[in-house]
Image (cartoon, rainbow, N blue to C red; front, side, top):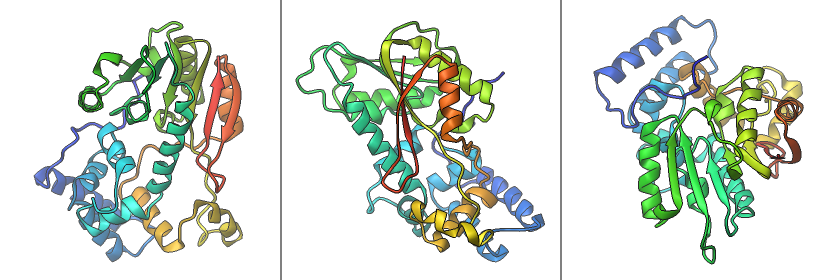
Length: 305
């Protein structure tokens, strides 16, 4: 069984012949599609706009995000985007809710910052989740970043140096399913990896790997995506269920056009709370809490060894 990784190119992708080829293949597929969320001409215009900025090109090539672009989204300030489409993605799409969940993750992590603690982020990406904590007054602690992507580890090391935390930090290029770590961590944070994996047994195996790596009493903070209702224009009787996602219908149509029809993202593995609870318990965990945002979506689950 191969490891789960969300991309197959480097972070920076030029607007060159390679991008033109990918776009041409997508356009060919779109023109042959039986049904699209938006009219074909509007969909093709969005495809053209996605080629005009680096984040858009990365999505077209990889159908997912790496550590660098995930951090770019989470760190985004409104003045940063370079094109109207990038501004929309960063400020009007459902990526905004992923950013909000990231900040809730940081609040949950803060409770584990303590003298002598060893905290791990898997996959770490650029490791903003641990590096943006307040370690003032804590002298002895260790931060561990594990990721299968060597480029993300490189960015994480740069990020660590910028925060002045290099002496407290270690990194490993390693498969999360094969950590080979036994009782080492007080906390594991995993935000997003399970969204790329749909096999329930593989997910249970992943959580079992996390369980082995934790000390007795150690915590796992985990995100997961609950199944969304059908689009309101497809099933009007479920329109009210979309209110908790806090996204206007026009933006939702554009979202589904980009991530579904055009990009066909690979990271939308949906699991119910009961399913995730069952997998964690099968891996040996006790579920301590499941916290949703103020609208009742994007949960963070805390499990204890």
